[in-house]
Image 1: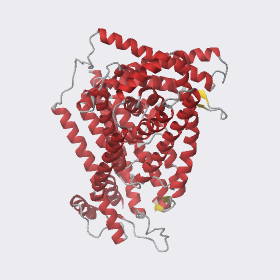
Image 2 (image 1 turned 180 degrees about the vertical axis):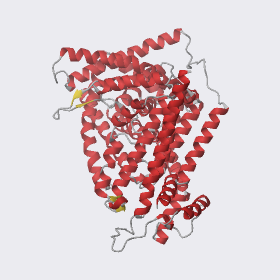
Image 3 (image 1 turned 60 degrees about the vertical axis):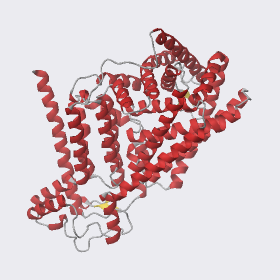
Image 4 (image 1 turned 90 degrees about the vertical axis):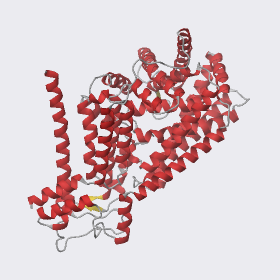
Length: 269
Length: 348
């Protein structure tokens, strides 16, 4: 079942995020900011750019290897991720038939180049988002969001959402299992049954929220969640940020790929 | 219909993020002004409910395929515009991070497309107006189908416009619209029907829940929606303008306009000092200057002068491929190097 496996994936990424490596220890604020700047740099390339995007792979590869994240886990997620970008990009080779390149005499149309460019951008941006959560715990992200001046109410309920996600997913899975045990094939999946099932889930959720609130009140909740460990900006955090952004800027301005290629092919000739 | 980073330009993505962020801050302000502490766990749990509810699938009548709820409008009906918007934003944020639905830049666009329309347009203008006093099941069904359809149509339209404005796809506007709008009309009809069913059934199970929520809602719903819409629009326009200004003063924008003037990709004088030095070095090492093989007699040139990007000579494209493979190899080597070092460290 697709959703069931996605559910376990949340848990898996969550466990990965509690490892202890250089990139895991970085201040979440730095990681969020640098990743966002990275994505801005990647999408700032014009649509026919392909070769200049390749050096940008360095950043996700760095996070993956230094963070000791299994390559397969991320690669599988990228492959199965929502195919909207691929679906829309697919039309480019059909519609844009100007020949742009002709390596080894094989004509390549602009549509293929821009489609490949979309794919490369897709891999770069999606892997960065996944790696960000694989190397940063969700409470860490929430702490960073709050200290990046996002409203407290927003961050607080986000934290709640995440905590109860696992609990409610368990409830929903139990209900699904019960439905499957009582029905054959497509029976039991009609809209009518579905509405009743999900309404019960909703009622249960709201009742749970009421109990949670009572429990929190009795433990002295005053609209704030306190945490023991807060991150502080260290020199290594700043250094990481500066070096990373400088590198992105360098890769954006200087076409490293073409320079290398030209030099080498020059020697070959 | 989640947008993806790869389809967005920085100007469009940035503008939508600004509008979305402004709306999040404003919604949170509205909430804290007349805050009921009870609302925070309720919002969190209902957000988690949307996730859990999306695991339960149903058969879409007439097609045999299965679907699940989106839940945006349901949240707006249960919680009211401001809290619902924050919850939708959170759900999408978690989806962007854990499921990599779209990406981080596209998250702003996704929150806009799926949050703003149900919360600040469809709910206050359609649902609340229709279901104000007449709370009959028929009216609830009609109102929720209509509002979900409108919200989804606006969302799908926004996806089309955002992609078009970013200039990444070759898809003509009319084809794109014909692809997106009818699908979302069908989705909207079903989602609206299901939403109404849930609201009515929950009301019959535990009327106090819906009415309790009604109370919370009236506390949280003070203030005018108009203000939100105005703030949103202004923020989006300002950032969009700033970003596109940035983009046009960017060397690449410059190169584009230079191309238009000369009608050629290569500018007579290289303006980049780094590149200049490198090209001097390159000239010494290369046998053929100007990076390209001379065009053979009779070789066909399919150059299109009106195309926005120049045709590239085969020689340059060859060096691009060689360089690309080399950089790729270097990065992979770098990755394996770090892996190797990690393993050694673990052994010690």
